[in-house]
Length: 625
Image 1 (cartoon, rainbow, N blue to C red):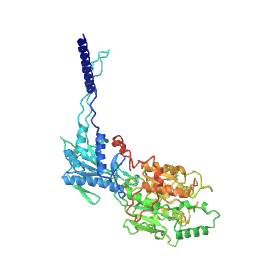
Image 2 (image 1 turned 90 degrees about the horizontal axis):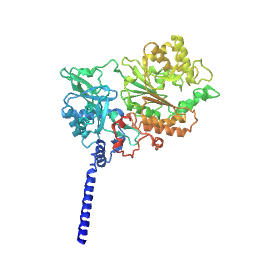
Image 3 (image 1 turned 90 degrees about the vertical axis):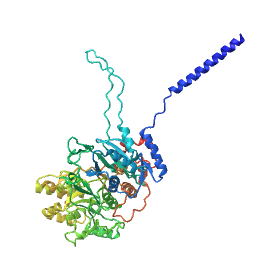
Image 4 (image 1 turned 60 degrees about the horizontal axis):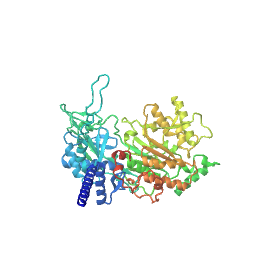
């Protein structure tokens, strides 16, 4: 009996052990195998390897990025283009640059060469922080490291099997039963082009060159059985189809000639092919000699309240804005032929005065009467700008508080026939005649409106935007001739006064009414930096970089502390334009990091090393520099 009990207990223990073992095995079988890493996770791991092996690199906005202080926007575009074209030339792969689409360069790859190009890019850029956006028709599928191009394209284009799930039931109306019918296969993905770029950021992290500064390769398709080839991504200016890609012309980009089909080389009606200069008026209110001239002029007026007569300090304040105005031109309008700096005999000590692209112009060089006493009135200067020596027929007129905000082309300012594209502001000129309460700016606008009403029977309602004004010498000269008496009086007006004419408003309105000016559509921001609310908007302006031009107009509206106002504005300008241009010999003095703290919530954290979830190409495309 005892033996039998032991045998039963032993059998039970054996069964329990067997059951436990089977349960554990079943549990192990039920645990799914770990999912393979996603494409983003694989890219992130590779990026971490690059960061570990090249400590000079940083992660910025989800991308492995170089840190540089010397790259202007035009140079960033050109570097992307040069890296791509050098690669193609080295590998003997034919290509043709297309007339530019915006500021970014675009390169055609003939049919049948895609796989070769992808392999060449992967080999050339292996181990380098070069990225490729995989492009469809006006769509970015994915962002990958360029060294992964062939594998990434193959994986993206891999066919997806139709779903085996069934759906649908017979309906009571007797229609065919759809049960058992598989879902249709998704449309196949086809990578039609790639955008190659090497991200760059400045050490202050305020300027970032990302995909918008890349070079696009468009893999054209064969038009068989017809002749020629068909564009894959963007429609070229001459249409989607080209009868032949045979190179029978050349285009010059930077200092190199590239063979292209003749259609690529022909100038279009809208292309601006004439030279364009820039004129900038500037004054240094800290110059003792200028201060003495101004004080003498104010005293000679014998006014009870000089500040109420166009002589206020805010009209002349200098925060080194000229430096950043010049940087903005170098950054975003490298097509400007020459800058004419108009001053009352003053020069900033940091300027490269002998540079061939700079002309220094004193008032006495172009005033009708060189013996005219010193003037402190922008209207008096504008009335005679067409007399600036060696000025191009077409030019942009800047005050030094006006800046370009992003890459622009000549066609933003002029039509291909030479007509200036003038920009109107939303501000309205009050309809009544000049009143005692009008300041000199409003009074001049009203006086100008009265002249236009007299000569043309038409009314001006809106002021001009505070943008760079596109002008021609001819428009200004003809206006000076037609309104000689009125403009001569303005030219002799030492300070702004309520009897002034606004010469630029007059010339452009007359040009419009005679068919020689048209309305432009620049995206512009006007900031009255005498208001605290406008200073508080500067971080968003820096973060977004979404305007074509902006103006930082001075004033005393909120009676802000001048030193604090100066610190904020100067730090903002240094953050927006951190790269010195060719006309600058001496960098600005260090001013600390005052602005950085104000933008911490808007600008990316330079210490952030974002993981794959924060590195999608669509997120990067939202940051335009």
